[in-house]
Length: 376
Ligand code: SF4
Ligand code: SF4
Image (cartoon, rainbow, N blue to C red):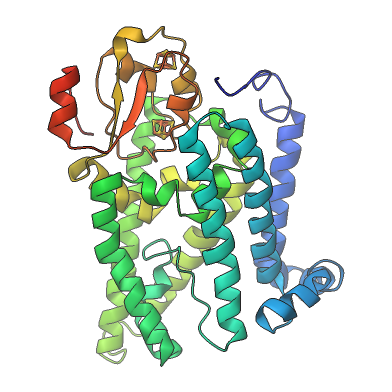
């Protein structure tokens, strides 16, 4: 049974109507208040939120991490509740699609366990607040030099784990499973997009101009964070004699404009207007690395049995990354695209069973279906 998307193109909330603009404004305002409340009106906004909103989580915060509730605890709690509540909706909505059930349970588990409970419990036990589900370069500070000295003791152990996850686990898992092991099974950004944002996935821009823009932004941002990290290390190893304050200022600039404004305020605030993967598609440096590995090294691809395609266009419509899946199906071409996050929704909404997500050895499937394989 194909998941029901009836009315999605007509409802105000899901078709860029008044309700969508209202929700986008509310989400953006929420992000601005959480991220920058201490800078607005001399900190009055932050004080008001602390007294009237964050404070309601005081007992939970004290129980979980032994500290007063603040905006970051509020944000983490809200984020986790959103993934769990809308994840339950996803489980019901895609209850006939085993891949969607497993994938959704996975993002719910990683968000609740590794991005919420565990980091807070580490704080409770006086350990560094470490998020095992986020790696460099998505969480760049994990491999910044001052983090090593700042954490000290157990922190060094966590940072070795961080380096292992970034440089060993990431390429190995991407080889076997493609980008989806992270973007659609583990990452909190993808988790929120694929649960709370599921109703907005059809709003992604499908134009080739958007595809060109994607490549013009995501790789420079990856290059920027590689440079920032390298400069910080050079500066640290030379005791600040080479770059002085410059490398630190660049890291702060990146954290503010890319880490906070782009990934948070725009990335989530604009769900109802631009679709759910704006950050993943145009900005995330982790997605850029995974995408390159997916195209050059991975076994993962979506195979197409184009003879059965009826050109309904469901697959292209509901691809959150703006990929023209139908064109691949009609050309009987495997889909091996850097931006594909392997969410599998194109396959779930196809009424003819044309699309299959595969990770087996490449040559076996190619010879069986005589499929043309191009990588881009
Ligand atoms: S091509 Fe399919 S699996 Fe890949 S991102 Fe688009 S909808 Fe998801
Ligand atoms: S591949 Fe499936 S969903 Fe896509 S156009 Fe063909 S029949 Fe429709």
